[in-house]
Length: 318
Ligand SMILES: Nc1ncnc2c1ncn2[C@@H]1O[C@H](COP(=O)(O)OP(=O)(O)OP(=O)(O)O)[C@@H](O)[C@H]1O
Image 1 (cartoon, rainbow, N blue to C red):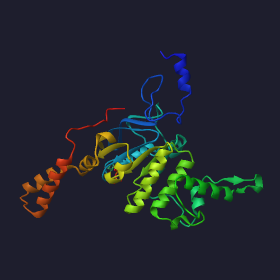
Image 2 (image 1 turned 60 degrees about the vertical axis):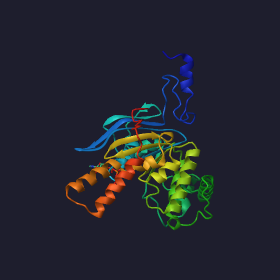
Image 3 (image 1 turned 120 degrees about the vertical axis):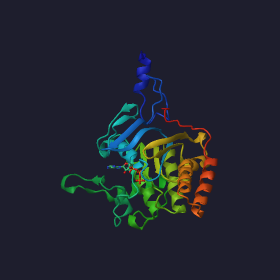
Image 4 (image 1 turned 120 degrees about the horizontal axis):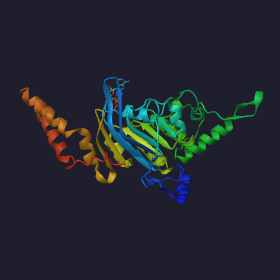
């Protein structure tokens, strides 16, 4: 039985106060900002996701890695309110939820920034920043857009994220892909997101621009957001991530804390040493003694040598 003091303590806990994995005083179990436990999703006969467990906490970056068809989009869609899971549980601040729309996700503080950003290229940066949530001034027939305030806020918010754009009047289409991603991140932070989902934000970017985006991911983390960073690139995930969920064909093949995995091990897991070995075997059976077979064998040997010696799947942990 919980005591009155415990009840009181529970009432005083808000999303803002809770730090990564802090315990719920009633149950003494860690409360995560988001927690997926053995979540699964089918599309008809297709199993898109099965038995996926992961947590998102304030001030932490959870990376979701996987190749095409791994189930990354399905996972984001469940968290962002576009689809509903049909197995397992999804909790937001300890409360079990099934989100039925992106609006509901936004109301719960979950904002998604997609690769193909919904921006209007010819409109100024500040118009895009406030698109759909314009500030107004005056009442009745005198109501109009509060242009100056919107420009000021846009400038201030971008500066706070360390984004140095001299002119918020310039069309957003003139910005680089990386800068546009950053504006979208700053926007989500301003509109009160607690969880930021970034869907392959570096996929279409060069090395330098990717670095810029990775820096803003850390800015968002340092401002206390829980970040979900979807990527297929372990070299982008590792420097900024605190936890790594690896998906393959809809299944979790590993869920690691950073302290439990090196970049080399993460890369080896992604490369799939076992699959390469299987491919080499198949080629051999087909009688192929080609250069390609030699290369596959060498690659498989290298990847297997780098792979972690023991399976450290944390997927059963909270
Ligand atoms: N609406 C749908 N109807 C039927 N099958 C689907 C649907 N959406 C996804 N799938 C299937 O579910 C599996 C996971 O797809 P998902 O799009 O989540 O993967 P992904 O990791 O995001 O891949 P990519 O990086 O290529 O977008 C795939 O086999 C895919 O074909």
